[in-house]
Image (cartoon, rainbow, N blue to C red; front, side, top):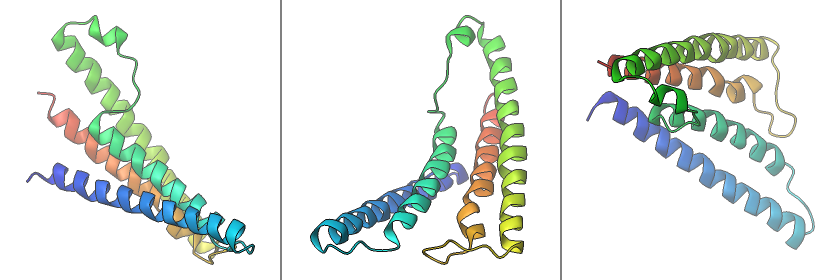
Amino acid sequence: MKFRSKVDKVLEVALITILSVMVLNVLWQVTTRFIMGNPSSFTDELARYLMIWLGVLGAAYVSGKNMHVAIDILPQQFSLETQKKFRFVVFSMVILFAFFAFFIGGLRLVYITYTLNQYSPGLQMPLAAIYFVIPLSGLLIVYYKISDILNLK
C-alpha cells in the first residue's frame, strides 16, 4: 500500500469520525433543548469547532483526490504536453499558497493563540488545538500537490 493511499485512509477515517461526532453532538443539543427544556452548554461551541475541522480537513482531502471545483474549459483546448505544463504551473501555485497561507500563517496563528494562552469560552479548550487544523491541512495539501507533480511525468 502506497504512502498516499495510507494518508487518504487516515483522512477518510478522521473525516467520518468528525462528522459522526458532529451529528451526535447536534442530536444531543436538539434533545436537551426541546425535550428536556434545558439546552446543553457545550454543544453549540463543539459543533462549530467540529465544522471547522471538517471543512478544512475536507478541503485537504478533496485536494488530494483532485475533486475540487475547477474550470477546465481552457486547458482542454491545449495539447497533452501543454496540459501537463499547465497542471505543473497550477499545482505549483497551489503549493505556494498552501505553504505560505495555510502552513506558515496557520503556524503563526497557533503560536499566537498558544502564547496568549487563549481558551474557548464553553469547552475551555486551548484555541491553539482548534486552529492546529489549518497548518495540518496546509501540509497535507502541499504533500498531495508535490505527489501530483511527481506523477505528471
